Length: 416
Image 1 (tube, rainbow, N blue to C red):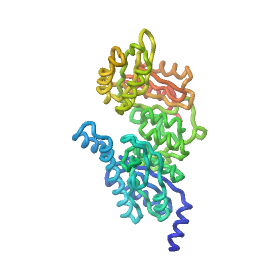
Image 2 (cartoon, helix red, strand yellow):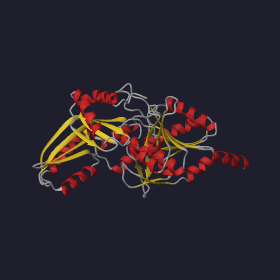
Image 3 (cartoon, rainbow, N blue to C red):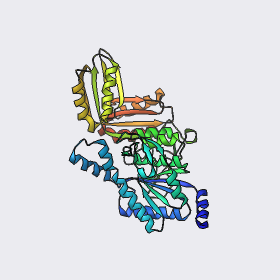
Image 4 (cartoon, rainbow, N blue to C red):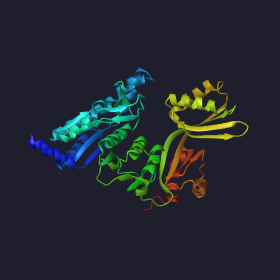
């Protein structure tokens, strides 16, 4: 069929974009219809697209809640089977909406695409993507609509990639297909210097380096999943954050030498609802700490900002999500004699405010400026961690907005 061959040659010469739409973007039939119009328009103009969809907003939480009604700690394999269904709903609806507009589209699960992962249920890592089927569909002018957040392990079981895993799906597909750009569509028009809900003068960045974006994402900025940023940098995938609700160029994530930066601080990331746990390690035996934190990791508990000081006994402090506090305290109580742990202290209602920079935050004058700025506002820092690219501070949660606004202005992040 010469018409098909001609179309294939034309399509092969057009740019390829992998476009991921998050939960709020596909949160209703109305939103899916609006996005289908945009995707169909791009298709009619000759653009090649692979669409990746998250579950509709709130759907994953609903599915987790259903599982919790059966058992609070469900079998990880069965939980992955359960929560992976959310994305199947959104991709089927999106494919139907595109077909209604005359666009050939096909919904595909992670298994159908052949997104291969390891065996870690609930937090699997992508190991390989087979692009043969996707390439075939693209050559035929069919728009693949792929379920984000999921893949298959070597035994063929459904696995999920953890919260925000649809971002990683999109980047992995873009890398495997050598796409011209991976575009992450969300409910904000790009990456901001900080949360605009806390600081109205926060401004959208036209670009940001991969290293700074990774730290922003890891430390609480929810616009991108940190795994997706690391994956994009490793495989040199051009990555852009855009709004699915309004037009605009968004924010381009680029390599350090291509990012335009001014000043020491690029942005401020926030992670709320934290608790801090401290205890005395009476025998100062490092293997006991390794055993303890391995146990936390096996329980799926992420710890951060670990600090250890030495006096008459070693004092160990770390932060966790407040939702894990009871489990951590119970584990410390159970391990106290075997690991020779002394008194345990904890504090609730904390928040981590992290300044992310361009590689100069280890300078003593930056830290001095931060502590002076917060000190003048009567904000006491509970714990601190620093590197060349970030300065993370744990403070009481009721001081969050004051701290963010004060630091944002102190480092002139509101200025172009």
